[in-house]
Image 1 (cartoon, rainbow, N blue to C red):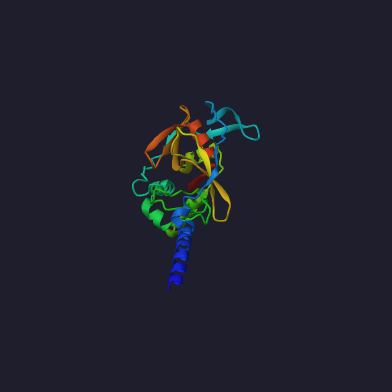
Image 2: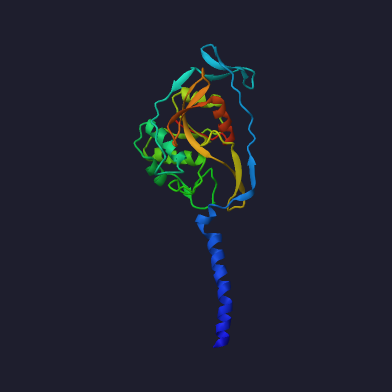
Length: 271
């Protein structure tokens, strides 16, 4: 009997450590916090200086700026515009849900009566672990503060599923990597643009490597945020953004261009 008890007391601590290891290794909530600690680095982004626009045949181009054919780079057919997109705050229901809130603002502007929480619950593809890409899924839950986020393809997919359900002829398009000229052209055509920027304009953006479950590493930008580009004032050199964390704000065009570049030039339009 004493021998059996001694064996049991010897094995018990081993079993305890095995249980603890399994919990921390496979608990999804812990997995969301897994990072590559050595891969943080400062963003290297070229400073953008935008000159004063000049009228050319009724359109406005940037002085000394040309396209690949040497023609003046047309920014817009007008100097000022501000679209009446109604602002929606992501808080308090969706503390990390800037992306789906920005989509909801655009859908409401287009006449669809839908809430940010309904879109987040029914149309946004989510994963509680790193089993998929930030481009295809919202990693975490936008209703939880410890979650991450998603990029343009996930929002495009959410929008198109909703629009299809409504039997709408409208479609969402992933226009990531578009130039500033293309973004302004969309605004001039009456289309607000969902874009990825920063939640802290005064802080330098850094990248942190996140190891996904397929063993690839994604460089996640700090202060990742999503807003709706709704207008511009080229005489002042500013843009108007519907920001889910604050309100409709006016930002320096050069600062916006730098931020748009730093966050992988992610953009979505519905038309």
